[in-house]
Each structure stands twice: as C-alpha cells, then as structure tokens.
Length: 406
Image 1: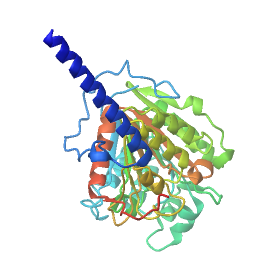
Image 2 (image 1 turned 45 degrees about the vertical axis):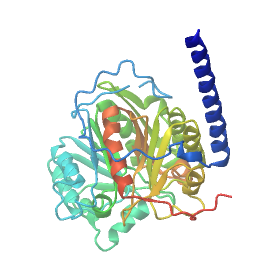
Image 3 (image 1 turned 180 degrees about the vertical axis):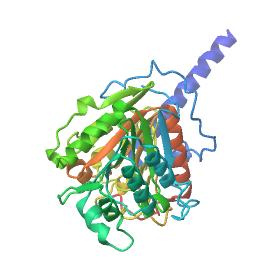
C-alpha cells in the first residue's frame, strides 16, 4: 500500500517538473532569456580525432537526398578532399605539398584532356604544367572571367594566361558584367576537381578554401556539358538547365551537381537544410540570402545544433545575414584569418556536404555562373567538420552591441 502511494507521489512530482520545464521553455523562446542557463546553446568543442578515409559501412538503406535519388561510400580512388592551410602552408615558393601541388599532379597525369572553367589565375608552375601537357598532346582549354581573368592578366604578377596562349592553348572568357565565378577542372573525362579554391597565390596560400575531387566519368560528364556550353558562349541565364541529368551514385556515394543561375541552386540547398535533424555547420565568404538563413534559424528553433563562421569583411553590412543569426541567438563567429575565409560550405547531419563556388547571395543565385556539388558521405562530412572546428577555434564571437536587435 505504502509503495503505491510513493509511486503516485513520485509521478505527481515528475509531472510538475515537466510542466515547469515547458513553461520555462516557452518563456525562453519568447524572451530569449535563458533562465539558469538550462538551455545549452554552446557549440561542441574542437574535434581531435584522426580523419577516417576508408572502410565506410555500406549505405544501402541511407535515406534519399532530396530532391534526387542518391546514397554513401569512402575510397580514396573515388574521392579526395583538400583544405588550404594559410598558417602552415603560406609560401608560394614551396608549392609542392600544397593544394597547388595536388593540382599539378593531376595535370601531369592527364593523358587526353584538361578542360578548365576557373575564375582567376596567377600561378606560373600551373601554367608551365599545362603547357607541358599541351605539348604532349593533351587537349587543354580554359574558360575564364573577362575582367578577373583575361583583363587581370595584364596586371603585375600575372601574365600566365598570356603564357598559355603563346604556347597555343586557347582561353575564352565570358563577356558579361556578371561573374564567370566557377572553379572546376576536368581531367581525361573521368576526374572532376571543384570547390571554393581559385588558382591563385592568395586562394591557395592566404585564404581558407577547400577542394573536393570526384573520380567518376558520370559526374565529370555533368561538368563537361557545362564546360561545352560556356566554350560555345552560353553563359548566365541563357544556359539551358540539365538538372534532371545531374545526379549519380558513385561507388555507393550519392552526388548531385548544380549550376547557377539555370538550376535554381538555392531551391536545391534549402530542402536539405530544412530537413536537418541533428546539426548544421556553415562557413561563408558571403551570406546575404535571407531564405537560407531563415531555414537554418527555423531548424535551430526546433532543437538542431546550428553554428557558422562568417568572413569578417562585409559581415556587418546591411545586406549580410550575420545580424539575423546573431539576433536569433544562433552561434556565429567572424573568422580569424587576416586575409579571407573563402569557403562556401554547409555540412548537415554529419553526412551531407554542400560546396563549390556558390556564395549564398542573390548575385550567385541570379547572375553569376557558379557550381555546387552535394555529396552524402559521412567520411567526407567528418573531414569538413574538422575543418569547421579548426576555423571556429580561431574565429571570434560577434562583440556585444555590434547589432541592435530591436
């Protein structure tokens, strides 16, 4: 009898506790005040585990990545991931072990074709490697931006495009006010190199950037179609969309590729963000798109752990969404690199990685030629999470009072 009374009493106490917590939660969501600090919002500490790049379990039951049908695998013969290291790898003369060195390895190994769609260029060792490839019979062609590519080639420290043209390599540029902002390289119709990294001294030795390489004729063909469109003079909104042909499963790893502006890239990204269940991380050179910020904030309000790092320059302007995150009490920092954090990167649920040349802005969405790659692979996501943690550890909190949240 006494045991039954104690059970009833304990149940009443538990119910009362739940009611109190619910009321405190409602108060916190409305006021933003965290009574007693019971609602934890801190970002997890920097990860220290060694990257795992092999032996990913099969992912046959991995949920479909919206809106296309794709899944997950690991194998260094399927993909490679690289990050610039502007702290320890900052001397352009010592390029051999840098991202530039990895790119030159690909150039030197090419047998039939190297097709390039890349925004800027000022690396003489890369130019020399491309000329050597051309001389051994490789089809080398480059599409670039007019102002930041061809015209900038006349500036001091440049001249690499002139080197290519003098050697018989054709370079074509867009003729639009909007940017041809892509950064992708295609080797032998079977290897696609993309990410945020411009092939410049600043891009590789001063900025925070990433590269992802996919070994797949099917994925490379998606980029080759885009290359051919631009080679034929189709840029910007005039380019036809082939988005329904731009997904593949590569050794079990789901991959999607999209091009802006024709593929409505944000409409591909936001559903993935909105479906986040555990965490979202982002690093952004430019983030001025409110619908994407709103999707992240909504997930944070639903209990998803959201955090991001902004490039400091421009982050406090009226158009930037840093204030939106700050006022929504989503943890955001400004990067600690005295040069640039140049990533355009989102990681969702430790499995989806969204990268490429696409800044989260209206210009990237509506005007510039850009590309985005989306992979569903926990091993790759783990490497990008470690890069996020490294960048987060040297970034700084937004100083109190920077923004008015009235």
